[in-house]
Image 1 (spheres, rainbow, N blue to C red):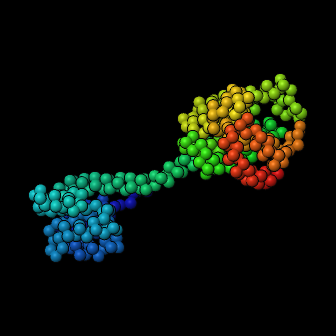
Image 2 (image 1 turned 45 degrees about the vertical axis):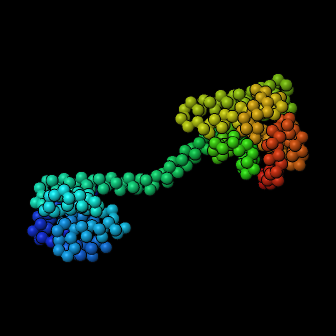
Image 3 (image 1 turned 180 degrees about the horizontal axis):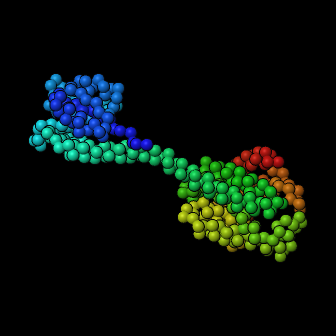
Length: 358
């Protein structure tokens, strides 16, 4: 299918000039001719051309007066105008260009030159319109691309998280619940401006999503330990304690194949540090106080809360009130006391989530 032909308006009070220009251009463009600026104005209100060839010296309304009207009308302001004139002095040319004309062709004109200059200006105008469209839609394009990337990241995270839960059916639903609790704690911390400087650069949505991978290291734990219905032996517990380090290695391996590592860095920190304790008695590194990354300190609270209020083969579920009491008593021992205060301020929201999931 051939491209749609461009529409050009030819404006000149001299019938001979119109006929000559028409003869040169008719094989390449759709054309409308006008012998006065007034007639042009009546038509252009209804139909805007791709380009106007405008004579300067016309009676009643000259080309300079016509272009002023065209450029002051929002509907036609961006329509390219080329002046056709018998004048060849620089002063006249400068005046036309200053009024918004894109070119100045002296009559009598060379047919090849006229065709080429029109072709060039239409190409420039087309590229300009494409650029304007691109700029106008750039934000939407960026948002669409970002959404696609985030959706892909979330799909990877969710698949990896589900892989862990399929093996560890004893703690089914734990990952999804800890995500919900973490969102509550994150939003409350932000609202209360707790650790404001530390979280200023965080992408909270990615932080929340990446928490799905905090137990990914459990894929390295043997089934007879991971699914054991009773209490673990000290030797078995030592094997379980290795899952944060293995989780970090898994996430680092994923990161080797991607350039955007932001969400994986969040996931790595969650996986490695969520079993560290404020008093330094946690694992795997025995970090103490603020040596533990803030992400790990936050997840420690929600991870333990879910473990307490969930039933296990070796224990019954604690009530919400009992879980809150245990976490409060461990403030400054297992947990960051500042974050425990935030937790207590939204404990009722944790309870509602727990009741909905039961």
